Length: 193
Image (tube, rainbow, N blue to C red; front, top):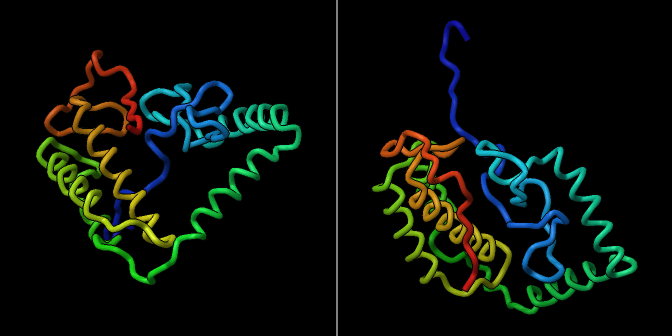
C-alpha cells in the first residue's frame, strides 16, 4: 500500500429504499411480503433508508412467517402465488435475444449520472434516457429481458427520487444541494398507476 495506490471504487453494499411495508412485513399487494434490505419499514434513519439486513430479517421474517402460516394454515398461499408467477413467466416464448439497451449501457448511464455524486443535470439526463428506454423496450420474453426491464424501471425511480430530493442526506449526495434540510426529513414513495 505504501508503494502503489490501491484502486478504490464504489460498489453496491446495501439498498437505499425499498418496498413499503407495515410492521408485519406486508405490502399493499395481497400475499406479497418484504423484509431486510428489500423492505422499507421506517425503523432506521438516513443511512439505512430501507432496512437493515441483519436485525430486521430476524424480527420481520419471524413475523411474516407467523402471519402467513396463521392465515394459510401451512404457508400454501405463498406456494400457490409462486407457482402462478412461474407459470405466467414460463408461458412466454423466449426469442433468444436481449433487447436494447444493453446491460452495459444501462450500467454506464447509472454509473455516470446516478452514482455517488449527483446533480440536477446528470439526474435529469439519466431520467430522460431511462424513460425513453422504458417505453421503447420490447415486451420481455425471457429472464434477461425481464431483468433489463426491472433494472431500467429501478434506475428511473432512483433518478426521479434523487432529482426530487433537493438536499444531501445519508448516502444521497447532491453537489448542487450539499446540505441537509428539515423539509426533506421524509420518505419519497412511488406507487404504480
